[in-house]
Length: 538
Ligand SMILES: [Zn+2]
Image 1 (cartoon, rainbow, N blue to C red):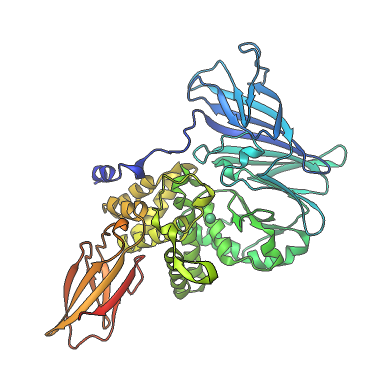
Image 2: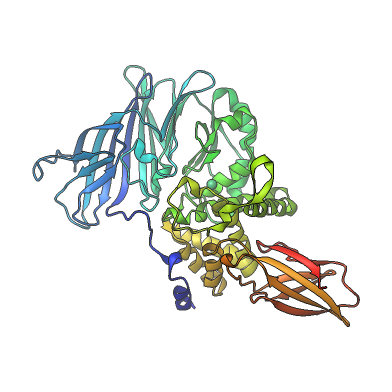
């Protein structure tokens, strides 16, 4: 069964990352950032522990707006072997060394400057200076010398030096705050589990911190807090009061929360929310408008499991983050507010795949669906934040659940999390786990769900024949979208559910009836992302 699966998944689904192949493996970054007392300038020093993949130099991206002043290798200037310690070309720091594949090497880069992007310095609504990192997709190297690709996860420690009046949040656990000379303080955070570079963040601002304490925890309580601008702290405490319940629910259906704690932080992120591990950054405007939605809290929180702890190994498999977070947020809404809310959310997700608002607000077909979810031709990373990776990705999970059943689906989700936690995965890894959990061959499903554009469009023609009704199901989607296998398509004929294998087109089925049907509904439980038209045969 496993062998058959592997054969089925050869090709793009099983492909290695196709944007960046990293030579060396960054294991840990120790990041020191000292922000100036005024303005946006900062001094940085980043020590990186590498396991070398070859004798090749370490090549680290760092935006040319950052001026490098010193590079140490294993704590020393590198003049013994090479005449210069390092080279600098445009956005690259080039560090020669005399070590070999398998060796450990430590580099330390000292630099300073004002970031063009990635580290955003603003004045908040009260006139106070704020610093917030905003890295996704690959803007960490605009202010940090890091191997800026999701496949190279690493542990990260932050020491952030700020004026005394600023509070600092960063990934992981606050170890200590040291008071320094000249009214300054150093905040130290540590995270001993690897996360992707897009997640390496700190924030420094005037902040109020409100603990989010649940009434009770069935599982070990995860310490959570809302960090907000002081004037918004009462609102933040209320808006994020759902967070403990969300963490507990996802812990129950997926597995233990991956990190020691979780902060929900009001920031200047350009996204509505950004799922940085242990410190989710939300857009400040939502607080001002008093509309931080439960769905966005659930979405970003779900990313702590999928996106942060289990990270897509390459950009083109982004649905493993966004489709998962979208689906899990819908599941949370269903859990908290009832199945009809879940169903409505999934129908809304379907509509978003089918249509978008064109000019004049008129609904038009969504052009994004003309490409597959795993689109290895895509080069615009921001363009990946589209309806394929979000709502259509969510529908891949929902279809899968309908196909294998609840117990196999959730067992597979848990197995996928436990197996790839703190690592990276491709779509083929998820498919393999789901085959294992369900005992079914699913290569055909993942290939059609992830590699084909569009969705099935069905015409169901019916006509009464004696004491039966004859149904003819034809797939009428554009030929470029391909024929779909629909092995368990349900059709409700006057309240009687028949299951049809509609994988060939047309498919005919005869249903016994006592009288001419008045109601024929295709896929009444909405298990498939499809459009269907039912008509009486002429
Ligand atoms: Zn997301």
